[in-house]
Structure formats: C-alpha cells, structure tokens
Image (cartoon, rainbow, N blue to C red; front, side):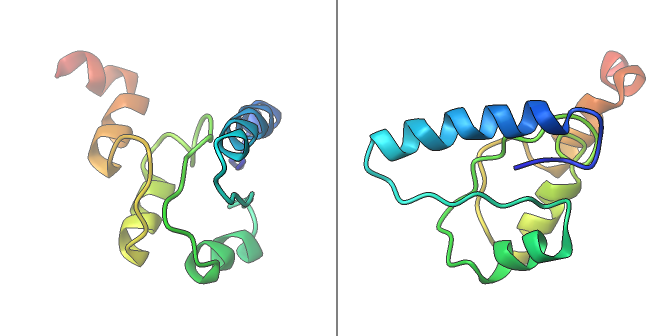
Length: 96
C-alpha cells in the first residue's frame, strides 16, 4: 500500500480508506507494503484474490507493480503495465 517515493504517506492514507470500505462490505482485507522485499513476497504468497492498488507516484503508477502482479498472476484494480507507463510519462501521454 505504499510506493517508494515522496507520496508514500498519501498512499497509506488512500489505502486505509479503501481497506475500511472493503471491510464494511464484509471482505477480508490485508495491507501490503511493496516497498519492502517482505511486502513483495507477501503479494506472491499471501493468498490474495485481487489487489486494490492504492499507490501514488513512481513505482505505484508507472507500471512496475502492475508488471510484478502480472508476472505472479494476481489480478489488480488499475490500468495495465503499458497504460500506466505511458500515463506517468507526461510527454509521451500528450503524444498519444
């Protein structure tokens, strides 16, 4: 639930709000910090059905975490790798 950048605290705040909403709906939820090796391992081994990405900035919105989730076959709620990579590159996004 947090990237490796200056927007880390915003990611935590967003993630807490999303977790609370899912819990109120009766879902079992868990928080993972992908900025650590343990967090990345937990994504692969944690028995999750889906990941609701609440990451802001580089690593969270640039396609990196999306690529990792694709590699381990875990569905997620955001744009795919290519869309994320293009959107974070403002010059390229303006071209397309």
